Length: 310
Image 1 (cartoon, rainbow, N blue to C red):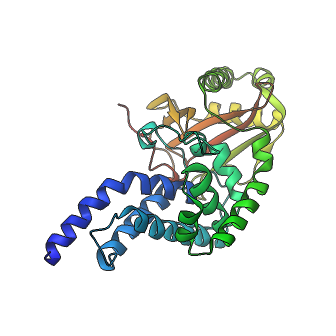
Image 2 (image 1 turned 90 degrees about the vertical axis):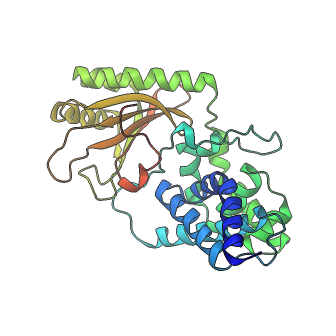
Image 3 (image 1 turned 180 degrees about the vertical axis):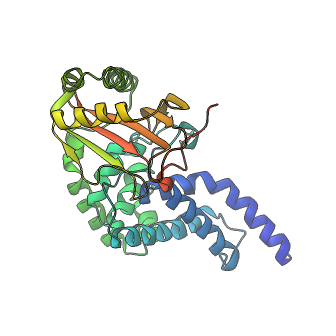
């Protein structure tokens, strides 16, 4: 096969795996733009240093390369101080995989894209995170996990065991986006927005858990709370105050992001550092109260979200 023909064949094969690689990279990094970069870097390596036998299935090689590239991205991200609270990227439904869940895996594929799950993964080391995602989300075998990480099967088992131990607090109250959870989140989000729009701080507080938190991820690009805002009263005052100062949106829509309802908002041009694009979502406690209000405004976090009216 000539070099141009080999390159074209490799590009076609890579396209067949592009979506799966992106979803793997996203779970490993938590950032949509980082996942884009991982896929691009994997493709670059495939073209510059392709596997020696192109007649063999490409998927195992791509899995190894993209896993290691994603781990490097995650390590670099954690080495640099982040400006303000860090949140995972919200992801639109068209980026979710169409294939059904494997009944043998520990975490469903929709669950593994939720903000709650991705935040839980932040306590893991990059290698632990990769071992858990590959084994407990994607259903890779122990041998496949070891080969992807470049470690022995015994070391892979240790990484997975420690990762599962670290995720025990999440496992006690998992975020599984079934129809009932979706309905409850949509209802809570709708009532929260209505109460905020009314300007009634007390009404907003009644929807919140006493220890409610607000997290705003703007990565220092936009004006936002630089720390977590804690307590129902403070959270309620924050959003009522923002509603009073914010112009009417050009477009706002309730959509499914990361497996649960969220609101996408597009605002008119505003003074420098004021947000013009954002998402807003909530998390509920066991009693159905809002325990977290989550805003994402950082540009790199919004690349997998529809930001114009359809």
